Amino acid sequence: MLFKKRGGKRRGAGRKPKGRRAGSPHKARPELNARHPVHVVLRVVGAVGSLRRRFTYRAIREATLTTARREDFRIVHVSIQRTHVHLLVEADGKRALASGMQGFQISAAKHLNAAISKGRPGLRRRGTVFPDRYHAEIITSPTQARHALAYVLGNWRKHEEDQSLKISDWKIDWFSTAAMFPGWAEYAPYEEEPFLWRSPETYDPLVVYQPRTWLLRDGWKKSGPISYHEVPSAKR
Image 1 (cartoon, rainbow, N blue to C red):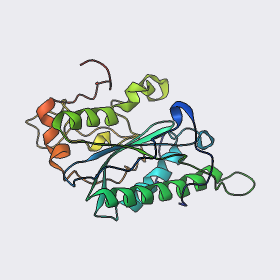
Image 2: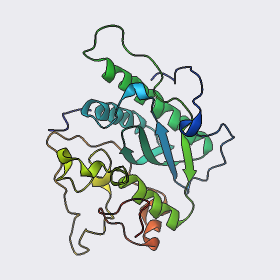
Image 3: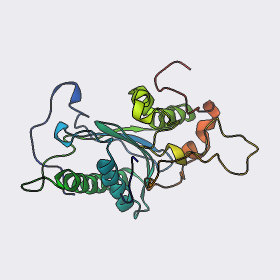
Image 4: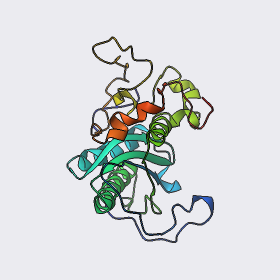
């Protein structure tokens, strides 16, 4: 099956990429209020290869496990795509966000480099994993929160990963925390507990927090339900 049980160093030096993949400009980050969650996007270098593989999933899972030891920075949702990772995070402020993201990137880079090097001859890979600054969008309204949740949890449909024959029977993306989201429109309101998705055998979930901010916990509901069929950026 797709998953098995279980499952850094700072970014390596290098020339700043140019063009549409150059990432976020190096401007001062805005101040962050603890009640506002943040949508973060992290891109990886091409040498890492697709992140939607069993061993790279496990590497990123280990990074979420390391990050979960913090209280001032909390990952609420994750979506792993081929070339990038989406995170919905909560932080106690601007410094907590910066420190938490630095810790996640270091851990993810260390585990990804180790996973990529395993079984290969020669020296262990120590190169750059995240080539540029992460993109961060502060969420301040229910509409923005709903959009971020739908975008992150349904991002695989945006990239047409759901059309792959290997995973054609998936209803949600198991390379994300979609199974942990309690707000899917398909959940019957009269049920005592959410419908349990049938996960791939030996699947280990990513390690995240339950949301503490009102926007990710309840506020997003003011802008309408989210269906697991929804394709981000498509008209509803």
